Image (cartoon, helix red, strand yellow):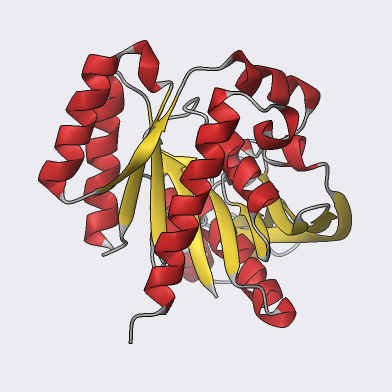
Length: 292
């Protein structure tokens, strides 16, 4: 069982559309949406939720007024100014550092685990699907990604699935790191712009740090052929696997509107190129399995 993670330097490159199409094309795969800050793969997979779990992470302090002697120790040591003159801790300001808990002489401070979101196990017509929703302004997205990924791997092992397809987060932050580390292959979807090349460079540096083999695809490549050539040259220079291009196609947008992967919605150019891209990625993954 291997993990293919599909990422991008920024949002809006078509990463999720390609991940949904791969899910439709794969013969034996579990699907995971690790873009927990802005999860939207479910819009294309029409999942039926089988299991719903609360995601808890981090702590917020609270003072028990019946025990508090208002000695001032907690207020003196709180570097975040989260405790007011009435010895009430404001949750939005509390960082859960536990200093107030340590310095309170009468142990009036309680530590309460934060509810940061939910994660789900669902079924789709393409296979099992693990996804999540991080709460508004909630932290620890990297930990939630790890939870989603771990559950997806558990399901894949249980079902003897050969692959986990991961829709990762854009950028290079904690959720991306949590998605990429240990994956068999990272596929970076970029666009033919100067910022697309810049973002690809940053993502490639991240995957290189974690020694994750990295392939690249340029979406909407025909809108700027010159920049597409530049990206191809950069991939060769950096030792990245250039796996092809996808043309701009209105069918990609129409498929999202209809809530279906583009390879099922259209027989057009983009759908054809995504099918060919999947065949190359699948062959590369199969080749990895043959290595000793």
